[in-house]
Length: 184
Image (tube, rainbow, N blue to C red; front, top):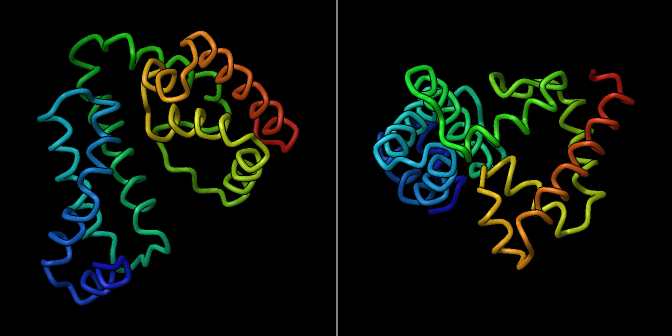
């Protein structure tokens, strides 16, 4: 089913909209949740929360890109669930490393809140457009899809050290751009 048809079902408040959304995007959203939570039950819980949030949000919001919309909701739900679990027990190394990396940009934006300012989004989009295709894929795989470094290294057929260096270099570039634009 096309995204516009799914959105129309939401606007008509037909419960079938959630089923169609799940059928089309459950694999995509599950991967986002799994990369952060690394637990089947938690990932499934995150998907349920995603479908519920989509039901509550559409309408009044009409997303222009449904996959990005539900991906963003899933990511936010996974981060929230991870934080709840983290309060109870110590996180594994993958997640702790990812949180440490994101802390470098903490003054720019917080993963606790959705990036609301359109100007910030434009700066980040411009930054990503200027990166090579490989650098952009590495950056997005790590910070949007939350892929582990070993998977990114395997995907690009390079060492984990090469990926870490690439990510560090590009985080610093983004940080300088954001500081120059007055976001820090």
